[in-house]
Length: 190
Length: 98
Image (cartoon, rainbow over all chains, first blue to last red; front, side, top):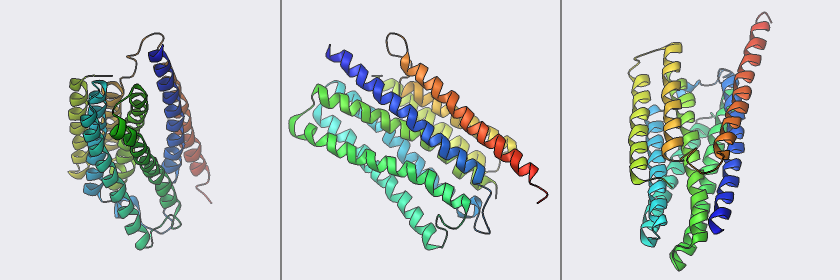
């Protein structure tokens, strides 16, 4: 019976992820429409640093991988392994958010903030929404890991961490498309 | 829940595809629509890899509701994306003279 209610929770969470996908879809559509409206400001090719974006991509991909490993250890109720792999996932996620904030601050410092052009408004909205999701995921991870650290792995913790892991993989998949269609496609046009 | 093998395979494949699209762009191997097409295929292939090997789509029991919702989402997404691009580009084309 317990397992049955678990699968319902995971299915409900999956439906949420699909709606979140539609949110990102509309932001991608907005970006695709506005990406050439630079209003005398810089184009993507002038402001995107491709090796920097590649580093972000590798970081988020690795953290997606380690979150999977964390849950594999969770299935065997190995508390320390769960904490270790989620700890690495957390650090990588935090490094990703840090790199993204640095990029944003750099752009705004150069006068290329979201108010500069329609292209930059769409860029900040799309990439910023993704970064916000990652930040919320990091906070959620901390909230879930504290009881694991204090009381060990329980079926309830495992179910919650399973949802978090779905969320984390999902954000990595969104990032693949941001990396490809925003950074690579934008950078290649120069 | 998947196995260690599925995660490692997914990770290695994703890594290769990421580097492949990165170097296709930085070494300017292709350009224009060909480039966009190639990196779109790499991204889509990587997303599918991760859907199956990380998220294990369609591996549950019973009717595969997860998969059905996913396909429905893809359908809506296609309407939003292609529809927006089509309408806005057509508008651009008609406003050319002004």
